[in-house]
Length: 58
Image 1 (cartoon, one colour):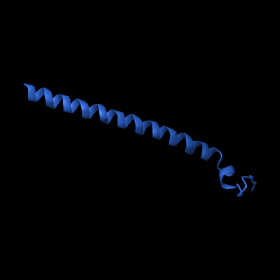
Image 2 (cartoon, one colour; image 1 turned 60 degrees about the vertical axis):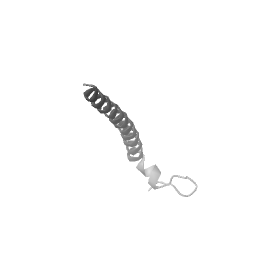
Image 3 (cartoon, rainbow, N blue to C red; image 1 turned 120 degrees about the vertical axis):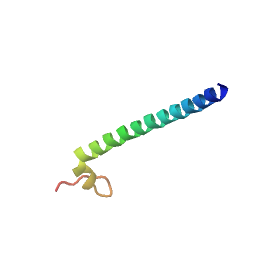
């Protein structure tokens, strides 16, 4: 019985760690999506900036 409890503890610990990693990846994914959306919405500004940050219109 103690061996089964030990295996259950290990499984629970692994599951909790996996959940933490999943949550971190979800947060990173959300940040990346917001950044890409911002770049997409303002792509002319990002593409057409000269070396001094001056935006030129095409």
